[in-house]
Image 1 (cartoon, rainbow, N blue to C red):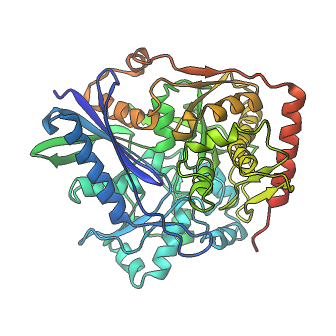
Image 2: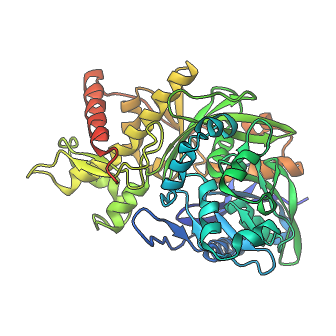
Length: 494
């Protein structure tokens, strides 16, 4: 048996590959950013071939840089940006359109028509989701509507749909396997999360042929094999990035919760083997499929988390590196009355406003770059606080502490402000690559590297904790002003 597990972490802005040993020590990391395409306002696309080439490239790079031979790799786990939609030709393996990214709002009018057609309650009850352009369903229909002949070919099974995990699995297996896992299927707005099957009512409403959909598997099993340097390596773990992070954080029991600070922010709480419906704008989703059983989660999604810092860096030119945001935010004692609501592509939970747009308020002649940077940092924590409060209201369980991961969790200012605005301890793990770790763990469980969750938990190492120090009156005033700013950005796009 090989000694190592390889995680492929295909994210919204970069493709990464991370190599772990059985003790969960990281032996190598390779990363490559890829092109973000914005054809129109509110539209976001990726080139699926660039996703594949960048992911394949970093996979080979991490193997080369680590000195590990391919035959020493026990299994591969895949984790991915969710909801992003790819359609490709089965015969050629070529995409028929650019990938439509989860952030893209182009199908908002299609969602309005589903609501007008009386399908909102069915979507909520069946898929656990709220009708929104965020999910894959309307993206599939949009491509089928616009690529000539695509729907007829899809009926014959000649055009295939997949989320990014499915696309990578197809490419890695040379077109031998067209499959996804339950966590990714649960994000399409087409999947019945109780029956664990595609829903015919929604397929019919959007005229999406069942023949184009992948087989749905558990999150931990051998799906197929890929050949690397003559070694036949099983692909044995798959989960959407947020569910993989939940698993990588060891959130195996009901009530365990984590927040990932990535391009967006995603708060998930494990609710066990019974789905929990939300009255506060959260989603019910599948946490993991393991050992023939499914665990569910409540999820709150923030569309723009760390991406607001990239916006300051790339579009406004505030600083050359994202990590500089922490330095500038700390150069002022407070936000100077400035609030930034980064609703660039609408607002996610708990508001679900597809027509909200970004707003910067409270500017004065004395406002400096540092104030705006601090307001951007704070906006991430405010949005997470809104999710936590909604989740506590739904479950009746106060969060004991928040487990944090993702790229922006490196930011000490942000983590401390998050603890302050939540009035809860924030725990950052020793291994911050929890998304990749979750994918590696799922793959390792499938091939016998580890026996069960208890063995995985025993390998966890203590991380860093941040405790609240802010006065309650200050916290309440900041949240009050934040909610005033949110109110002003809602329903802006016409």
